[in-house]
Image 1 (tube, rainbow, N blue to C red):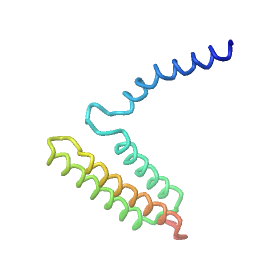
Image 2: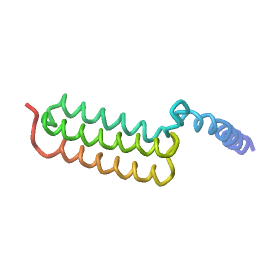
Image 3: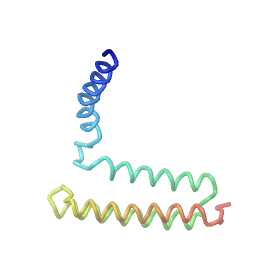
Image 4: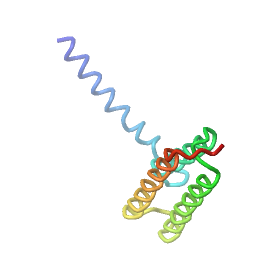
Length: 116
């Protein structure tokens, strides 16, 4: 009986905390989903780590940075076209572009060339 109460209490507590976590995952200042913003940061961090470790040559890093800037410019254009918001279709396009860039970062970091 005590176990049922403990499990039920845990479920209720989790249900009450979920909206707080959900609200924190959205960057309301820019109306940009945290996933897009966080992925941009993560990919920047991965490029920087590749430079520090020597996994990326300066040319490879510059190429990746240029591609990332292109995604950012397109994202900005999508926002301007839609009054500062991203449509679901726009989010899908950006997600696909970020997936492609992520694979390129991985491939460049693991191609055997070094920056030193």
